[in-house]
Image (cartoon, rainbow, N blue to C red; front, side, top):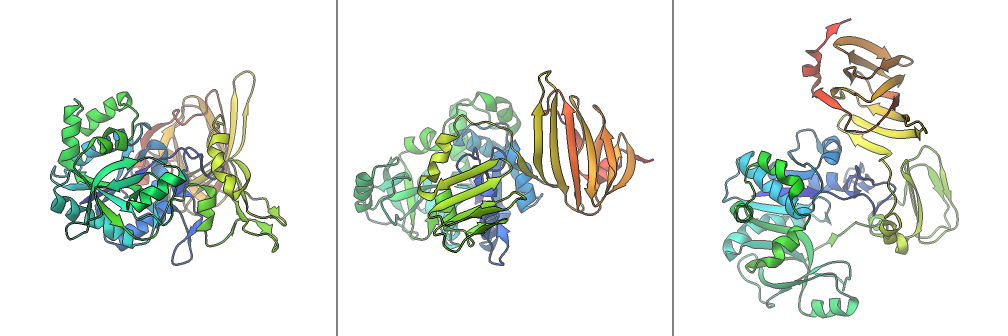
Length: 458
């Protein structure tokens, strides 16, 4: 069985720590068994490894999240890249073509799809592993995992079984139908019928989805699907496939499962109620501080409060009201002010757009020891790098230079450039140009050994 983790999200529900590049699964606010800060994706990947599943796992994501995934769980992670966001059916369709035409997965192989950010115990992944046997034993076309509800939730969709009788060695049930987020009275009635929370985990034979794509006239080749991706309808896999399928079984999971999709649910699982610089006085009750800024935050005598601060903004909210942030920010749009990359991370310090159209963007950048940015150039901007600390090697138009703290590097428009951190390196980058966007990057190569073949010693 192959596992595919879907990594998406617009970054609104956990603003200001999350943004369009850093969704909730990348926030390092949880704690590993070793007491080290970790994100949801790092936690899930660790759990997959502990259960012997990481070697057969892939991650499907958009271009904006690739480098953050590589930064957090390793550059060798097998990533299936979506050209743009188009909901879960297009993402899973693209994944199927990748597995079939690029990874060489047999059409008879079982594929399990799951979110990248479930907050669960290890026992959950034992249930995921059982999906393969459940699908084979039941002869169903789809096999789902349903969580046994612990309370009548109005936040989740429900899977309603045909009857209460379990079948087969794994104890699966046949599915009658689905119910989207009910009101409380409906949820109570659903629980009486032994309905299950839909946690977004399901499995199918690869051939099942390939047949669906063929019936829609869609290509089974990954490169061709990428070319047509922008024309695919934005629709969820649930609506396009699951709710139309009649032969579905569900495997009940009676264990801990939680969606950490809002500030109030996330802070419930944080091991410490303060992260970052600041003071939360002892008379504060049920109050959380998460601060990514270099300035202290003081919270005095409050109840049920969340204060979150990052380069993207500052949030102050009552915990119960925190889910409203997505609606409040509906019209709010700005470039991400903090990003993790495979080589390190950066924060935007300042951004100005002048009346004549010229833009100036200032970043503080950290490049980790032994890491490098790609060999690249820009057509619409120049850059000035001021090295704050550390030592590095820089290649400018095939010439190698060694730099250290205090050195200034000028990179005019059209100049090929890259940097390799000999030690951890901090630098200030000032971009000046007519259009300061990610699209204005022409990359020639990524690996430093390959980059170094483009240079001669100055």
